[in-house]
Length: 160
Image (tube, one colour):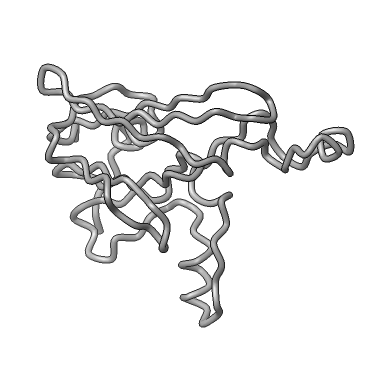
């Protein structure tokens, strides 16, 4: 069984800034039939959905089964022999502006549960500076009138 590296999880959650060569970014990918971006190094593969800038999957490269610990209702349905449907509240998704169900007042204003960020399509930008590739995902949130940007970095070689 592959060994878990805590530093890799920090990277995946965007809590640790590290560098990534440009060839380690794949923008034109798909995850469960939805547009995605994949960051890969020698230890870990992280998949981000363009919708919601969701971290959809984190797998260790040496895991032959490529099992992600993140919530994937489509995979679970397949494993149980049922038809699955896409749920934007999968993986590690962003709850902006709100966590949980919307209040009656928020619902009346059109605010969905967990806020609107996980339903928005994010604009993607990758830049390479001084050997560092950066994935930046941005969206305008029309209901709360905010701009949300998430930035992710990954080192060419794993830390563990």
